[in-house]
Image (cartoon, rainbow, N blue to C red; front, side):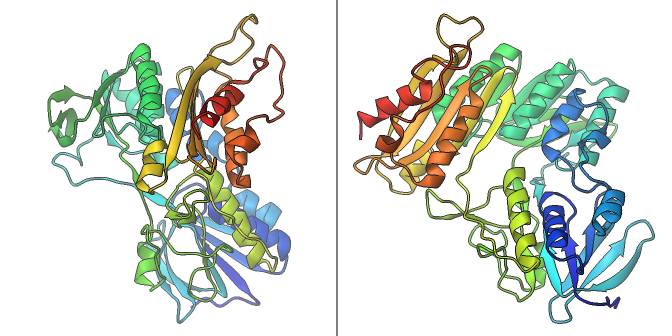
Length: 454
């Protein structure tokens, strides 16, 4: 055992949630001894920027790092140790077993308070050929470094992205910009399963115009290889030649440590926490991509892995660990990305999701302009709104359009968090100027259309 003088906080995981919690706890309690263990070589980095590093828009991988271990030590008196993997939690002894990966030695570290921020990992199905060279997932900075190295050193010509979600499509764009011939294989009949079908169709159209070939409704069965390097992707319908493959078929919360320690998991399979980010084990907290959250619209528990959520949950945990009082209200599932020049955003529930919940929903779809019709430089925008029939409760919104479209989703996210109805929203006093928006913003037009159906 390695006892501390005074109270100590141990953090497992050195990225968004973990280091947000550590930093906030330090602000609240200068006397608290804080140690963070991170299995990888970096702390506190912007994982969402990795596709843009692969593309070459970001020059160095280190540019994605917000704070290094040295900064945490010097400015915050936080002992952040990279290349240290926690292998076991003993809640009775209040200690964690840590492996120093450089020295390949283990030691026990005691804690008074423990924060689990182990994140999530990409799903990697056990398919023939999946361990061949040139097969990549994108989860941590070293993944993006390996992908970029392969592009620069081996000059691959053809890439296949398996999975049509956010990361998969962002990587398709990055690889296309690198000059590769890019195909996307998706088991579902549409890309972006978090959108309704007509909105996903607009995204598919944008990908096609960019030069990405889509194979929808096709499952991957195996991977071909020669000389231990991938040469093709075999789907249920065809064999696609490939020099490089990106696996982007979803993620799972990293809960093995918690489960083995007897820390309860929730209905989603992620760690169960309350709104203060406490687990059901005394003095053990959890935050970020390894925990489940309350969805404020559906009222159900959900597993949503987003950097925005992880940072907020980490901050909440840190305040409470420091003796303050803060509560995490929940999520509404807001997400945004860019595919080429097309911005894609969503929040709340889709029609499909509301139907699964047994809600009597109505929807409206409109197309409009991002700026006044007569002002140069405007683009198109498509909006879908979902509401509950009878009550008028606003359930969700989706946006696909040219630059200037996507951040309008924040109006919808705010309305969801406030529990507003469509009648409440229909005459919102939204800003207007010809270079920014039409006098009737497309949001108001869409709200008016769905109001007629309630």
